Length: 471
Image 1 (cartoon, rainbow, N blue to C red):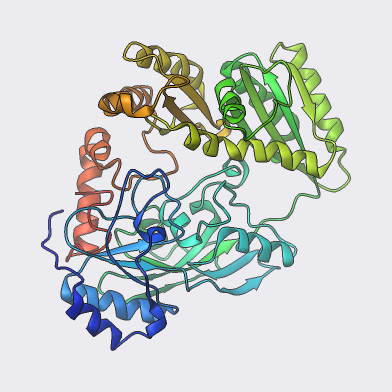
Image 2: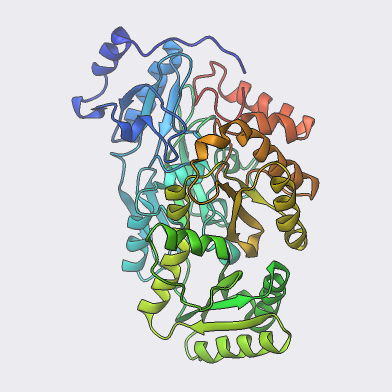
């Protein structure tokens, strides 16, 4: 969608100062101008309203002046949606001053919060009310709920509780024309027309600005336990998942697949001294179950281990006997992306596949990549929902810069194969600016056309996150 925009120049900012308080204008520091992988350096004027009405006034001014807006949550996204590198100077609309938990209804299992609330703070607020907000991911100490909804984030608990979309009842949104949609419903059933909530969730700020959310709260499992299990292969891991569900049903709340390479990276970078399981397995599964009061959760895990061992699925493992030990195991899993960052990837991929195709995809993708270059592959992810992080790295002692010329070729190999096997090139990190070309390459033409028509109708001046998701 090509629309001529204008710069957020000095004259425009002077006009904003007449309608917004001085505290709303922040320094355009690297916090707002860079993204975690360092591949994008953005530009813009940072404005941080602290009420929905101020957001609406800001957006209305941008709409009238045809100035682009880049919504900015915690800045933790990995596809460049939070930075604008080309074109006119935009307003970077930061939600960092809108952090309130507005209301909690424990009996209803609902919490209403500002879009700038940090995920970890929402989790704590839910715990203080005797409930659980189940969305959980490695960046929860900085990621903000508006951004997480805008990317439909997943994380570690999708298997049991679903993505961010599944944990949201309603939204408050400022439209591109500066109107406020008051959609903070607490209803679990409401079939009165189009579900506008689902239009904005996952839209990456291209259709409007989420300013508030009504979130579902879950019951805290009375007892939980974690086990780290060595499996023979990804195929064995899938069979283990099926077996675990047969035994405890929806009690399986976490099921993470981790490769040997991921642990080697953690030890290579000093983030882990030694693997909990020795010798280091080629493949491991981190399993968490949560059960009602009265259940002997450790006995259940032992039963799963015994049954899996008898079927040749598992050959080693340990059960965390304390909360601290369980947290240590989950910290290892959550630290894998940091190990990847320190090693420096040639190409990183966030893909999803039908579960039954995963055992075929992993070796075939490696074979195709190794035909191009002798790269190391770190494959890990949320096996229960088919989401893999399939990343390629230089050999030990090499700098990734020497492979820069084949980075796009490696990504094409991975994405082509994922789509060929019925999967997606974007599982939970979104499209941003990094994958706009992939949207055009892989999307069904009818779907792509409908997306463009929705964008044109809701954002006729093209001011919302220009260049992200669609072009």
